Image (cartoon, rainbow, N blue to C red; front, side, top):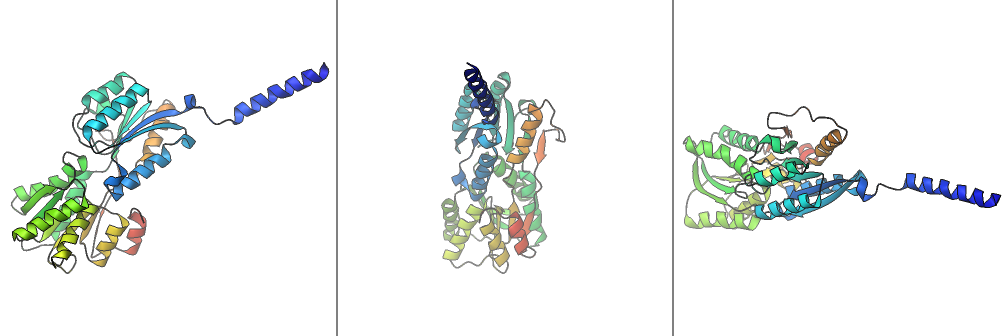
Length: 325
């Protein structure tokens, strides 16, 4: 009888020890829904998706639902599904800046905290906790100011836009449009390639075949800049540091920065894809009953970014700021 009591006590102690050492069950995890663009969109997006998935995982205390699409309606539907599934937080990189008010209001009604990342949404700031973003308008402004500083005798620009209505497209387009309206630059063509390299190549080939003169390619991401350069090369048109055509891209993939370093491209604007750690930090603040501080009037935490040109870029810049391999 005494032995039975001893064995029972040992069993109870072992059960308690197992409970103490067992990882958190699903009920203990913070439930997060991530609505993002697909990693195939660009090198930037691939890095962004990997960053989000590395931080928001079970090992870090999260149960995660994800949706990847460039279609805004599909993103809205995915967000609604996540709200229905009862996530605690909704993280959104919107394909378009408009159309989100109803979904965000629904999230608020259900006590779900919303974080914007990478891109802003046109809505009242009361509908989200914080936005960890790049200043897309400032990226465009920096590139255009650099271009004006080159003092070209004229600016005849092929403008290749990203996905229309996205924050990146709107921001990077705005600064260039201002100079066109001011009469300082001329648009030879302004057309979207929706971030696609092949489409960008076709746009530039069409301009070349039309016989229109141009001396600037302003492409709103690195992939489209690469497509444009492929068209220039196919037709024997020089470009870059010592060429006829100035080439501008955005995102700072390592391969793109190497093109700048070699003088094949002239400028690449940085867009940091790393927002997950800051959002994780903010969520932990809220989970501990605190308030997020240090944001501007739009509740933004803005990444520090810069541009790189062929005259000053270094190998160290590529190692420090370049994305991918």
